[in-house]
Image (cartoon, rainbow, N blue to C red; front, side, top):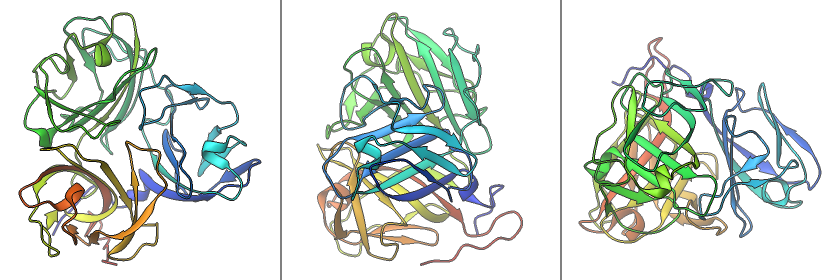
Length: 344
């Protein structure tokens, strides 16, 4: 059995579904005050809207594009004790539109400067229990290190430059080294580039940057989201597809509540699942991190009590011999207080 110090995953991550009203509304039931909220229209072709406590609630980023943050005072208007409030901005609250929001807890505030690296962050909001931090820093244009505050080695690092069009750079432990990268906003396959992560693996205190302008532009502001794996709550790994309806079983040690998968050996889309859109196997809804597309229904995955299994020979998740990376968050089978999680 998997045991964890995180007995209630919804203290740190939760999906909240939204029905847009075109006016204002306060969403409750998240279970905590979020520091990072990712919203995507389910029923329309509309941008993603990513908001965090470090940049401030008026600043939105779109994972499907290269653009700078947009400023909307009527999108998320506040993070609240059990959720967040929305204004009338169409990308998050269009009347008659359904949305999914995915919410994470970082440090509970904007945080302060982290001075562990050669670059001092402007702010770092960190939750060492859940293994998640948000850092804003100014790039140098040359080799540097940045403190992440996790006191653990990050398995995933996602960086976006804030002052000009740029790719979303993704380090993932499943890519096989610090000379490898994928881009969240594209379908591109694994890239070999020693300049992004300076061909240096992250440590328990810092991650490394080279001279790449997207991740370390001279004088430019950047935002970094860092995730460290926590037993029974989060898992970041890789698997090989078998091209069969009885797909490869991927063990996570918990029941996934949110799952994102990317094929890396060839160009393909980023697949996003959660356990609340329909909520039973295998007929879940798909959204794509790198496109503005509305969700579509398909029998693609079983989300199980201790992992997940592709149920289709679809190339974005289960091509024969295809290689894939994933991010998963969810609820452990048994916590340190013997709290069970059941299959659905």
